[in-house]
Each structure stands twice: as C-alpha cells, then as structure tokens.
Length: 526
Image (cartoon, rainbow, N blue to C red; front, side):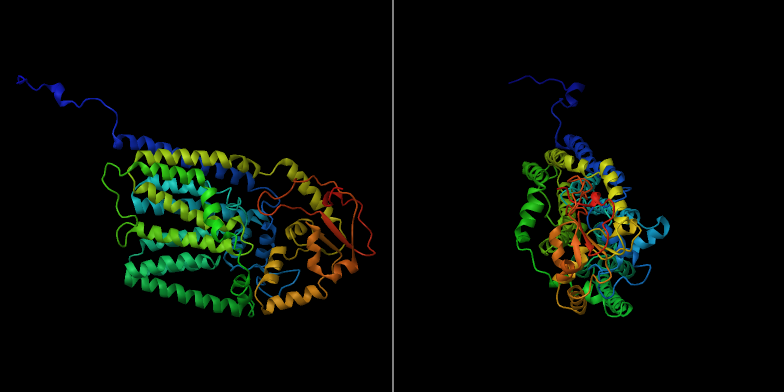
C-alpha cells in the first residue's frame, strides 16, 4: 500500500497541457474575423475606385440614369416609344436617385452613391441579424464577409447604378424591424419598411410575406397589424400609381414580368452552380469544420432555435431570400445580379451556423474557406476597375457620337447620347422586356410603332451588335445604310466590366446624309 503524502501547493496548480476547446475558440474567432474582413475591404476598395468612372460599369446603367431622370418630368410611366420605354420596376430606386441627384447633379454618380450606401446597409443588417440571433458578434462579421465575397459572382452589381442593392437593404431592414417589433406601432413601422422594399423591386414581396407571417404566428396582435398594414399600403399605393400614370403603371410593374418565359436551365443550376459551385470553398470549409461534433457546451440546440426566437426568424428570412433569388434567376433574362438575395440568404445561414457552434474547428475552417474564396475572385476584382485606356476610349466614343447628324438612336447606351449633347432614348432591355412580355396596351402600342414609323424622325442608329438591327423591321434597311468604313475600336476596351459586353460599333445613317469626317472610334475594326 502506497504511503500517504502531504498535499503541497504545487498540487493545486493544474498541469500545463494543450489548450481546451474554449481556449482555442478565441484564436479561431480572430482568424475568422480577419478572413471575413478581407472580402469586405476588397469590395470597398473596388467600389471607391469605380464610383467616379464617367462611363458605364454595367451595360444597363445608362438606361437607369435616363429612366430616373423622368422622375423630374413626371412621366416615369407612360406610353412606350423609342424615346422613353419604362423599366419593369416600381419607382423606389429612381425616386431615391432623383433625390440624390438634386444635390450631386445628374449622371452615374447619384445612382452609384445610392447603391454603395445601400450595400453597406446590407452588410450591417446581415451582421446585426446574425449577432442578435446568436449573441456572437463574430458570427455576424462572418455573415457580412460571406456576402461580400459574392460581389464577383453576383455580376459586380452591388455598387452600380441599379436597383439591386437598395431593394436588398430595405428588405433586410424590414426583417430587422420585424425581429424587434413588440408593439402594434412597431409592427406598422416594419410593414412600412417592407412596403418601401416592395416599391423598389417586386421580388421583395417574397421575404416580406414570409417575415410578416412569422410575426403574425409568433406575436399575433403585432403581426396581424403588420400584415394588414402591409397589404393595405400596397393596395393603396398600387391604386394611386395607376391613377397617377393614367393607367400605365400596371402594364409595366404588374403584367410585364410574369408574361416572360422561364429559364428552365436555372431551376437546378441556381442551387447547384450559382450557390453551390461558385461558393464551393466557403461551403466545403463550413461542412468540413462542422464535422467536429458538438462543442464543449454539449449537444447543439434545435437548428431553428426556440419557438419565436430571433434564430427562427433568421432562418425563415434566409429561406425567403433564397426563394427570391431563385425566382429572379429562373425568369428568362435573369442575370447574375438576381443572385444577390440568394447570396444574402446563404450569408445568414452561414452566420447562424457559426453562431450556434462552439467549435474552434468550424471557425478555423471557415476562415480558410473565405480566404481561399477571396483569392479565387481576386483577379476578377482587379479587372472590375476600368483602366485609363477605357477612359480615353470612352471620351473618343462620346466625341464621335456628338458629330453624328440629327437625332440618334443608341439603344444599348442611351446616356452616352446625353453626354454627347443629344436627346437620349429608351434602353434596349426596356424595349425587349416589353416585346417579350404579356399582351397589354403598352406592348401593343410599342409593337405598332416599331412596325410602322419608329425611325421617321431619326437620322442615325448606333448598335453594339449588327443582329440587333432586326428589331426595327424593314424600315431600317429601306431608309438607312450601314457605314462600312474600318474602325479603330480595340476589342474589349471600353466594354462595361459587368453585364453583357459590348460597345457602340455598328452605325446606320439615313440615306442621302453625308458621312461625318471621323466615326472610326465607334466602328468595328475590319
């Protein structure tokens, strides 16, 4: 039998060994924060470098500028023509842009300012929702980082003069308001924010209905007030807009997009390619890190959280965002910018997963995945910033447009006509959307004009692609001649970094008019 010995002070000091899970987690958290800040910083640097570029960052940007200008003349919606065919969006974004433009002046800057500020609100709202639901700020920062890393696969659209960042910001602010609504007055405020989001882009209704239904189930009196307020305000707004526009509003905002065909290739590709493969490093890291089993706090709680919890709302909102992104993507013509709500939904779910786990392995793995994802998209981020050569080419194109005689139609880039001192017109996408949409008074009127006398007062037509000439019917070939002089445009130079590539390169001039001295900057090389 071993002899007893006295207990000394050294026996009361724990033996030095490897740190336990709780000791390792702060280090993993620091790595995760650093990796999440990296794509946020990359986005901010790119946005600042791009915001002052005097030409299009995305091929529909100029059309947005010209459409927003109609806020000041009161004809945002009206009969379609080559001078003004409205976009198929509600008036939220052009109205806010016009307000900013009253301070900055018109151009790309006011619209980009709206989008950049809205994108920062998106990052803050994602972080706030996840932090509130999990109690862990690192999880909120991770959610913001995951969203920021999707800037490239979402078409570099977060900072351009288009509707996407503003509608997402208002939608997430609405979810934040729903999460904090404890009184009927607060429910009314949440409904008003979500109405503002829906008045910016129609897909916001998906998240709004999901969030408000959750509120009606979990906080009945508050939720019913909010849900009823949302429905009444939307109905009143629709009636007022229809009266204000002389009956044209519904043709564009309600009837147009549902009449388009579905892009069946994205029914599954949205989930497998857009959300899966393009975010592969991040999602694989999350999966690998989550295989470490329960942390030191015991088995994980139910994934949705407790009934009525902020985590439950977060997961419902994420589902609504994923569905909104899918609906935008499967709509024929839905480009990469439609993925932004889906990526925000992924960011919320990743942040929620990080926040409910005490595993240091998960944080470290996600940090590595985010860092790798940032490196993968890094070259595209560099190319997103236009060069000095692009600026010079843009100046040459605008100068060449300015010497064209009379009225000019430039469907792909109407704002360049304003810059050249000429009257602008409708954008090709607005015209095409209406042509492809459901039968309506607006569609019939546009089709009739294009088939008869659309070019009666036009002296020159400038296109990005010769194939677009078919939109004008026989009138173009009968009354105009294509200029076949060899041009000096450098392929790829002055192409917008986002959206469909292209620059003015095909010129038709009315028969009998003299050819201007030097149009080579807007003609295809031969």
